[in-house]
Length: 91
Image (cartoon, rainbow, N blue to C red; front, side, top):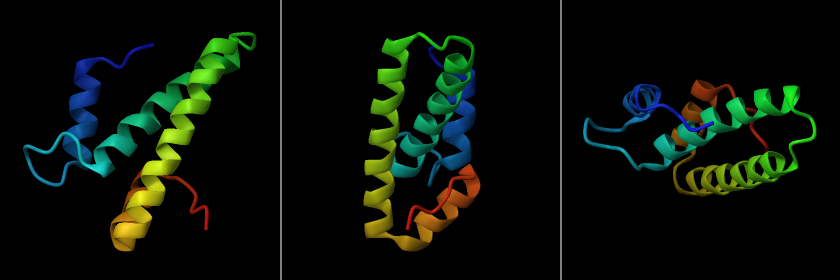
């Protein structure tokens, strides 16, 4: 279930604000979105895996908090981020 390092590097390089950036809000949201997508696929197959479902809910909540933060701080970065990730604007 863990992300492999090559995929992580690819995501970090795609969303980093500068070459040494590994922890900006955009990178964190992108990594969480990838984990959420993989967990969602896992739960489609394993419907009774309740511990993974709980983990998914925690990840979604964490991503929501980060998106709220970036929306409040810099709306233009927020809009470009949700467009890149294909997420809906929650309003």
